[in-house]
Image (cartoon, rainbow, N blue to C red; front, side, top):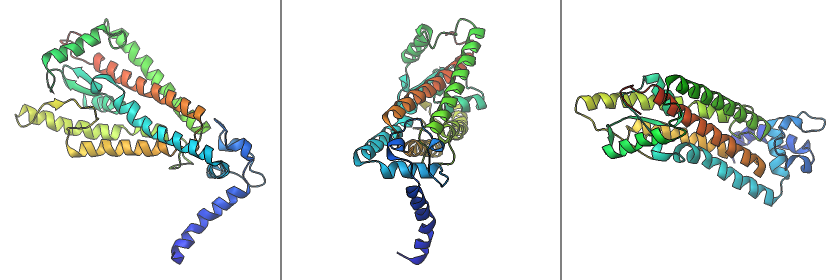
Length: 294
């Protein structure tokens, strides 16, 4: 090992040694659901986020570390399973005309795919009508179709639920264990949810190009896909792939999750995902062309 590399390791090894020498009692920190690092007693030296993580993992026995690893695996699956897979009809929401660009970015960032009715490759008229019938009969999707004011109320309520679930996401990250990617930045999970507007904007930009080519007879209709951004231009696929990779890394790196914390994380992420998609659905239905009688 070269001398320059050894010199680079000195600050890290010093931090580890300091943390190990001032660790709280193992019975207090190894299994400590929803107890943040600043509530532990580190003795004469001041503790920090990294000290808590090092102490937890260093003092845990083999069985507990195996539990932490299994929980990290489940956490890493949350972004892909909840956001991208667990939604009927491949996250498609039919609209009668294109949404305004900014609204479409928000809808795609929230997790749905707005597609123009009659312009979805692989969908017959019968399948499109079946989707419309589902909207009419669904107590959730069709709850606000009777009046525009009721739909606006549903949008407002879902927006409040989404903001509340975002706040819960921040709290559970602060009072649970934090991400190894940013121990001093306790809102990294919420940040990942919000930066979905970046791949969403790239998606909308290339979608506008595709729609223009379709009008000029040089492109194909949009194809519904179970993977967000699939069958689109490669920059769109790349943007969404990077976004989901970042999400998996962020959630996998949440350190030393206990089973109770894991359950709460799953519940909160389920609420975030459901509120996001319902808000996107209601926005699309509220801004639909009145000629579309749904």
